[in-house]
Length: 424
Image (tube, rainbow, N blue to C red):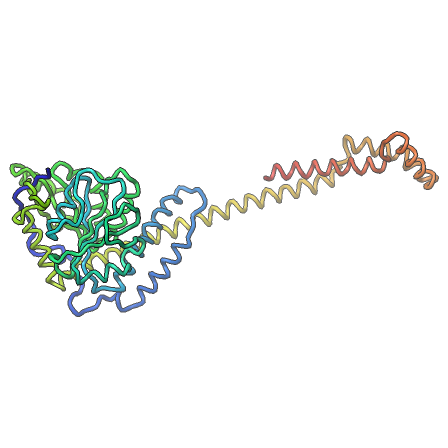
């Protein structure tokens, strides 16, 4: 059985919203009023058309960066810029068995996501929202590459939509696949979903909070300016202060010290698989205040949106540099090909001028032609031609002129083939 206990937190009001200096309320952010959506749409088209076919060291990282950026544009930036008033999307991420699904179920007071340490090899992510917000997520503007379904699905590329009356409007939770799943597609999907979040809720445990994989993603979140909150789950009561202090130090070292941290000590789940209310109360209250405060939600959205936009520039610069390297390498290769065939042309021209063709078989045939057929042709052309025909008919050999022509053609073919093969 899953065990938890009394909860503690160092997060008061929605501190993650207070960290942003973006405007709130009726003010519109500068990027919503200008041509940014059109510019990003054009950027999306350009990146989608970019190719990195040459096997340079920068090619594979560029392809990966291009895929990640197009995913973020499609899954988050473009739909969020189009609807700044959409509900705040909280993506719940973490390692296998960290208790993400149990926590989501407990926060929405319903079993909306299958819980368990062992996950199926394919598992659709679960998005739970208030019934009044369902239309926004059902339309498919957010995460357009995922097929919506109202039932749990084993099919990859699906998003299971669930409504929970206990969840207030303006807030939605997305229970993502495990970030350390043994299935490559699940890990990739988890990363894609996290990139589509307004707020990351990272769930870890006292036993695994120092694992490398979550911290790689948390550093990525910091680099993109994404709003982050942490849940330290299944903490033995006697170790709660020590583990929480250590995790706080690690967060501060990664410049994430302002991220809210909630500590959930060990306890038993009830018959429905939900955590006791007293355990989740600090976290539930924090989200309730966030849902009720439009300005706080807008601040979180703007923090993550501004961070994501700021992160676009260095990625695009890197892609441009990789594209320039491709062009430079292609030009260099093209010049090498042209130089090789220019050299081949010179070799053919030189071979035609220096008498190279008049050696060996050609020389023998030339001497035969001059010593026989040409002499008689000079004296009696008609008799010579008749003699050649008679000799060819009797002996089966071609006339000396034909032999000479064949020998010259053979030598010329040999020369052309040789220089062409060397150029290739």
